[in-house]
Image (cartoon, rainbow, N blue to C red; front, side):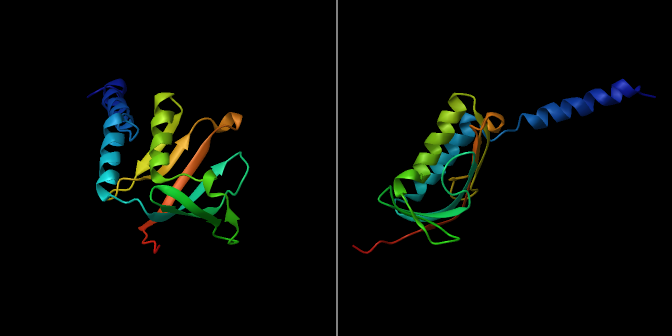
Length: 146
């Protein structure tokens, strides 16, 4: 009959292997960016929630992007217009992920399965009030009439 330790080693090995399946790896980021770029979207809107120890709204904000530039942002709960320069495009979010990954402050990232854009980004370190979490939802293409 196998000893307790003999049964524990395979379980521990599976946990270590499972822990290595992480979405922050360069291949996942590269694949996600390729998926996003293949959409060829330069005008879209999305909803973002930001959770951090920082100024500004913490709730849902709708962001409108036209020709790869944020042109409008407003709080969904109140309709209050916000400075669009303070809100990221999807490309800005990718740059944020890449920068955080490069300086080992990326805690977690998740990507939309079909469109490739980041749906959740969490960077370090909430313990010293410098971390931030973005959750992106409801991305849709937009047509602007000029």
